[in-house]
Length: 229
Image 1 (cartoon, one colour):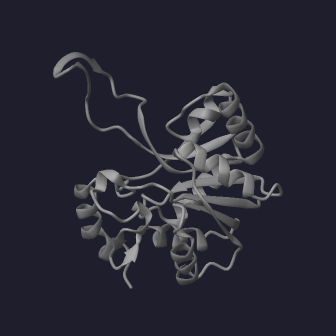
Image 2 (cartoon, rainbow, N blue to C red; image 1 turned 90 degrees about the vertical axis):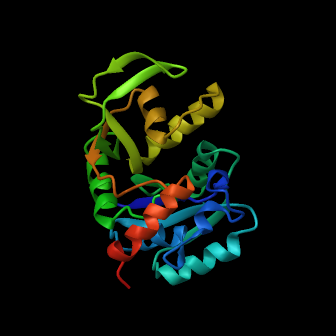
């Protein structure tokens, strides 16, 4: 299997209430982007990477690529207005020789190389595979603050990244989404809407997405334990 990795690192990070673009916010002394690069560097099946970054941050991103020790080609490109746009742009730079593309958000710094490898392996059995965790909490639907229904959590999973897909199908799904003006919250939704079969790969709550200042505080508490220098 030959695979390409797309690292989505073009977000502004508005909800973090910081002036720094999210992927370049420091965590344990390194920008968030560093951890995703370090993870894919340890996955033998990944033969190249495409990283979407905010316009003007290419130099800083290239420095992080060098620090992460990647020995594969890495292409940097300015991302789009939305995450979906960034992935589509990166897909256009990925190698047509890659069977699988794995997409990951730089805002999830704790995704381990083994999780990337597991998603890549599962994607070969289906059209795609995503890291996810089974829901443990009771879900409530509300009207304002009033509960209107309780939703059974059996069979419900919380999607994460990495997410891996057959490249040909992912390209076709993004092309169709552009033509038909679909907006999706993740790439798996696009594959599903095109009739593809996507599996889940069990992950953990440790693979958290850093969105708010509270998330960053939790990540700071985790980083030294998970990434011993």
